[in-house]
Length: 128
Image 1 (cartoon, rainbow, N blue to C red):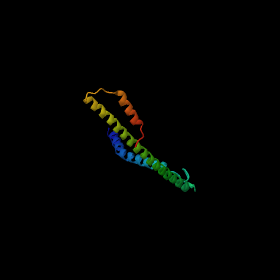
Image 2 (cartoon, helix red, strand yellow):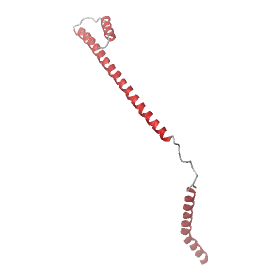
Image 3 (spheres, helix red, strand yellow):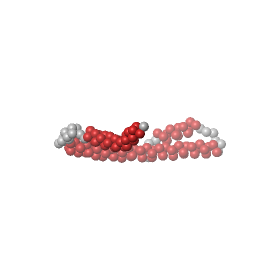
């Protein structure tokens, strides 16, 4: 019995040493596999036209930005003109609505054909 216990104790003492040795060997093996030998991999980019191409791309971006700003200014002008036209149309509709309200308060009969014609004429009138 004593001999068996002695052997078990010897094995138990060697387990931490075995784990330490195994992990050290594993670390060395992974670091060795992680290193690439020289000359392996993609070659360096020695393209002499690379700088010219980058400059062309930058210039194209700048030109397109300048063209977009001009288009944006034109769109802004059109938007402002449409807003002004819409405000004028709204004022015309309000005038006709006020006339209808006055006639209703005065208990006059409504002439729908007259109001329709007035609205159509005011909407087809040029702005300004």
